Structure formats: C-alpha cells, structure tokens
Image (cartoon, rainbow, N blue to C red; front, side):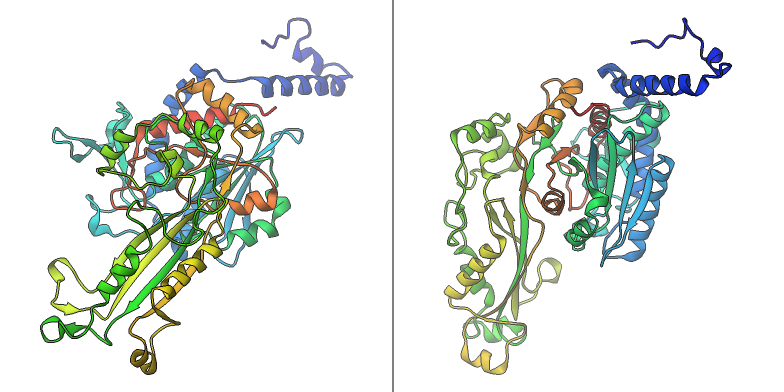
Amino acid sequence: MRFSTKSVSFSSLLSKKSFPFYAIIFSLFFSQYSSAQKLSQKKINIAAEEKFPTAIFDLMSFLKLQNDGHFENEIEQNFSWCDSVFSNLKFERRVIKTEGAPLLLAEKKVNKNLKTILFYLQIDGQPVDSSKWNQQNPFLPVLKEKDDDKNWKIIDSQLLQKEYNPDWRIFARSASDSKGPAMSLISALQILQAKKINPAFNIKVIMDFQEEMGSPSLPKAVIANRQLLNADMLFIMDGTRHLSNLPTLTFGARGIATATLKVFGPRYHLHSGQYGNFAPNPVFETSRLLSSLKDENGRVALKGFYEGIELSGKEKTLLNDVPENLDSIKQRLGIARQDNVGETYQEALQYPSLNIRGLNAAWVGDEVRTIIPSEVITEIDMRLVPESDGEKLMQSLKQHIKDQGYHLVDSIPSEKERKTYPKLASFKYRLGSKPFRTDMDSQIGKYLEKAMQKVFGENYIKMRTTGGSQPIAPFIATLSIPAVSIRIPNPDNNIHSPNENLRIGNFLEGIITCLAILDEPIE
C-alpha cells in the first residue's frame, strides 16, 4: 500500500477553511496506514543487524551495574538505569512501592482500541563468588571465543564494531539471567522508535529487582495495583532455550519450595582420633536419611508426591514432538542413565522434583580437618507443577523425616533433648513462586506462532513447561491473563553459576524475536 497526495495536496488542505475536517480525515487515514504496516522478515533482520553493534555495547554497559537484590544501593542504580531508558523511549513511568524493593512500571499507549501486552523483566541477579570466575570481575563483562583447545579466552570486545561471530559470548553476571533478554526487548523498542513505527499493541513493562530472592513483595503489589497492571497477555522475558538452542516459547513453569534440614551431632566438633568409634558422626545418619528420599530408579519416595499427574496420549505426543534425542542429552550431561520419571526429558519436566541443592559438614580441600562435625546442613528444593500442593508436599517431607526416627527442634537442641533423643534435627521450609501452565492452542499461542514463523519459519520450539521457576502466578491469578515465556539465552549459559554467559548470536536472534512480536497485530 502506498500513500499518495496526487489528487489533493496536503499543502492545499492547509489553505482551506475546512482544514480541521480534512485534517481529521487525514490524521485518521494516516494513523490506520501507519498501524497497518508490517515489517517484512527481511526488514526485521536488517534492522536488528544494524542495531546490533550499539545494542551489544549497551548490554555490556548495563551488565556493569551490580544487581544483587539484597542491597538497596544496587537496586537503586539499576532502577535509575531502567527509568532513564524507558524515559528516552517516551514511556510513561510509575514507581510501584512495596514492602521490599520497588517495582518499575513503564507504559506506552498506542491506541485505546488495541489490546495490551504486559512484559515482565527480571533485572536482578544471583550473588557472585568472584574467585570462581575466569575473569577479573563478574561485573566487568568480557567477550570470549574458544581457542584450539576448546577453552574460552578473552578477546577484544571492540572487534564487535566491525565483525561478528555468532558463537562469541559475553561473560558476566546476569548476561543470560536476565539482562540479555531485557536488552533484546529494549533494543527492539528503540528500533521501532528510530523508524517512527508504533508497536502493534499497547505495552506495559513491569521490572522486578528481587526475582532471585523469590519476588517476596510481588504478589501483594499485583493485587494492590490490579487496574494499573491490567493487560490481555503476559510475556516473560526470562528463561533458557531448549537444548537444541532453537528459538523457544515456553507455555508453563514449575513452582518452587525450599527447605533447610539441619541434623545435629555432638555439641561441638570432635577430634576423630580421640572420639572415633564412640561419638556418632551425623554425616552417616544424614546420608541414610537423604538416600531414603528416592528409590534406586530416582523416583521420590514421599507419599503422594506424584499424585494427580497423568499424561494423556495426546499430551505425550505434543511433548515428544519437541526434537530431542535421549542418548545425546545423556552424553551432553555426562551421565550413563537418567532418573525413571517420565519416558523422555520433556515428560520428566511435567512432574515435581526433589533436589539436594547443597550440603555442608565441616571442611574439605586444603582446609580439611580430622574431626567429627557437630552438624550437617542440607539445602533442599522442590520444583512444583500445577497439580502439586507445595504445602502438602513439604509436610510430607517433614513427616518422612520424623518417620525415620528424628525428633525435630525449632532451633538449637536443649540439654534435655540431647540426653533424650539419639536423632535430632531442625526443619524449616518456604513456599516460593507457584507453577503455571498456558494452553498452547490458545489465542496467545496462535498469535506468537504467527510472529515466530514469520522470522524463523518452522525452526523454533514450543515447550509445554520449563523445569525452572518464575514469579508469574500472581499476574495469572489476579489479572486472569495467559502467560508465555520468550526464551533467548543459550542452554549452556551457566546461569546462577560462575562464568555465566550469553552467546551473541542468541542476543541478535532475541532482538529479531522481539521485533517480530512487537510488529505482529493481535486479532
């Protein structure tokens, strides 16, 4: 479609007394023309490639801001950065105060008759142990490539000004989780602004600065600001791609519950030579307790753990349409066999899981000592599915511990308890984010399918759920809207661990993905 002024010039309209009427007609026509235009696949790719050098250096600048949600000053500097970026994008901004860190809401109203999409951005990151990183500082991002020995080596990031290798990676805390995905959306919005193209819908962006702490203040904030956050759909710019590293949409996430189990031994650390064969070592008792939580096939032994979960033939077909090879996955992970929960990897993700995420008893390595430790601390996490009741499962775990002969105390055992009970422990748990699942054949699924097929054809993945957790349930429950996670980072990105990284080819495809979505009208 082309706009022509051959029959009546715009300048001639200005001279007519009836200008207001014609101006209105012209404005309405141009508005319809502008909103109806769609970028082609070629134009989207070209625009993303042109923006890429600027976008990646903007990302590296963003990554320099330390972002541990436990520290107020780090929250403030990231909040200010985000506020400035969305101010430049001409978004209206609003601070949503909470009992913890504030949330930032940015909004762009394109047309009141269009639908509204709410984007969720995670801005904070996990704490870091700088000594474990293979670079000077996790908050000084570096560009790396693999050398001939398949080791990552630092290269000059200025190379990105003139050349590009999609397999180069940026190493920094939050590169993948989740400042990279956030910058993909921001870069796409900047492209549209530069080209004077409106998004195909109204946009709200909510920014969370304590996601890694479980977003403790988010549920109450969503309820208190229901009208402010109201939207038709929710897109989550967070999460890792499928193992194939193809662009990925994920229609659900597991919830999480965590627990700390402390098993008590002697009152204080004892010399193993003097007290070995006399004072029981709590590590052995803890080991027997932990091993009782799963059978030899890797299935959780807690009563009712898998209750209510049945996969139909249709659901299994849908899950196993995802291109995966079990042998390849095991080889990649370096394991000889998998736990017997579900017949495939995708099926395994549809069930709750129980994991030992950390153990502590005395010292190891260069600090190892010949002692019998006074206590053993076990950190546990459960990943929950919509059929799971986190409270019920945690109570089942607590009862299992009691059934193994343990007397549970609130904190430190009293003298009387030490004299009376041979097995002493404390158990505390916390329920985190809840699970969610969106129908893949719903309106949001069909809409995203059109946008993804436009730029990737059939070369993308739709997953029913992911193994990780996201604090999205408050939006779904309170706003009654469907949610889908837009996955950008490479699956081998080391999130939450030393040497977190983002493949720059994924970052570019992330910008392309966001452009396609922003430019696709919602029917």
